[in-house]
Image (cartoon, rainbow, N blue to C red; front, side, top):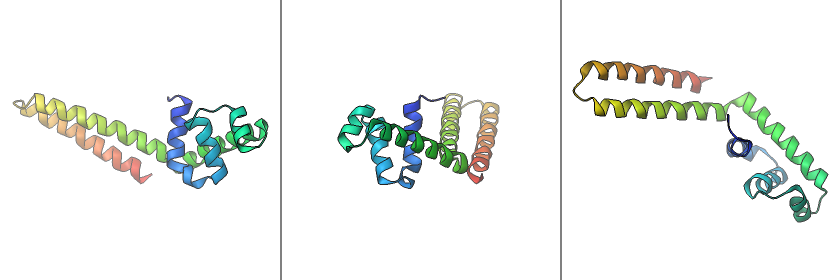
Length: 122
């Protein structure tokens, strides 16, 4: 799937506003600025263990939000579908003279469109 930093970045983008200011700050320092637990604990004046616990609890919380709301999943699926539509559009442009190819590709686009609506309605 994704590497953890990208995954946490996306989760934070979707659900970060639901976190406390302290949780937001710790995650930004850890994932955004790539600081170590020791550096964060020194900067915030708390123990390394407190930072570790905050990160683990906050990660768990973000995954729970995603499990319930599924915004990141919907975003990723929609992005894939848009990329597929663009790919199909390029084929249509390349095969302007082939009516049959166009109709088949347009049918594919319609299927993707219906899938998108299904994903967004969940």
